[in-house]
Amino acid sequence: MKKSVLFIVALMTLTSFANAGEEGNKIDARIAEFTAAWNSGDHEGVLAIYDKDFYAFADTVKPARDREAFAKLLASEVVDYPDMKIETTSLKIHGPYAYQLGTGAYTVEGSGRGKSDLLNIWKKDDKGVWKLHIEVWWNSVSDAENDRKVRVEIEARIAELTKAWNSGDHKAVLAMYSKDVLLIPDGEEPNSNREAFGKELVLEVKEYPDIKYKTTTLKAHGNLAYEIGFDTYALKGEDGKKARGKGDYLAVWQKDDKGVWNIQLDIWWDTKSDE
Image 1 (cartoon, rainbow, N blue to C red):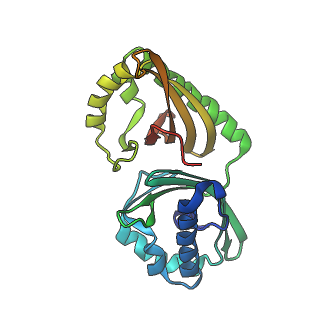
Image 2: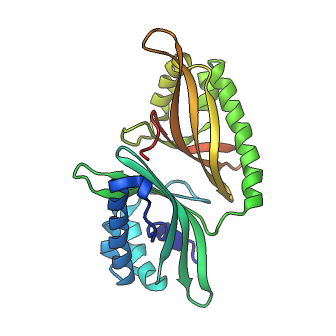
Image 3: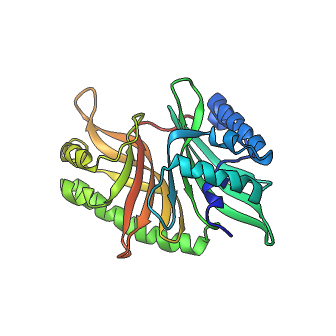
């Protein structure tokens, strides 16, 4: 099977989620538009679902955002891989961003049906239209035993990050991030300015001590994994007394050529998702 099919399959879903509310229904409507365009062979209609500044993460390559090349790919993919069907297992919304988890099934000529995991990040533009901003794709559905093995490895890295943060070692924290990391702070535009992020960490590790991370979901394929969780940290309450803050996060980890897991994509929110 061609690897490129999963670059596209991550877009369709058949399931609505009541807990996502009205905005979730809007995302479902956009996905329905995509599905109709795909199954009619309208690759331009499919491309219109993507944000102009989209990113794609694959399990064996660096992040890509070549829209022109992708448009050419779509022209053949809508013909080669018909009858796309995706089941969404989770859809969470935080302000102008939403993340969608699920699995996708599609027809592969001569092989029957293929299946894969997906992770999509949707972004609402200034006109209130949801577009696909980031997608992470693999060639298969994750294996539970491998997920457990990788989870142990990544949780060990998280323990390193926690120790570095709580000791005020901002350089060690930054070392956990890949050189071409993509960062999306709460409600802000994506950026890859690792140097500026490093300067922010100097203050962050001091202002928010005693940080603790809790992983709730992790799936891994090859050298790419996504992790969803929440963190808590110390801060001063309005009355000046000690308090705890809490936020959600989504991270994509990528294993480098030395076998070390580093953070390739980091999205965090200071509040819990809309339920």
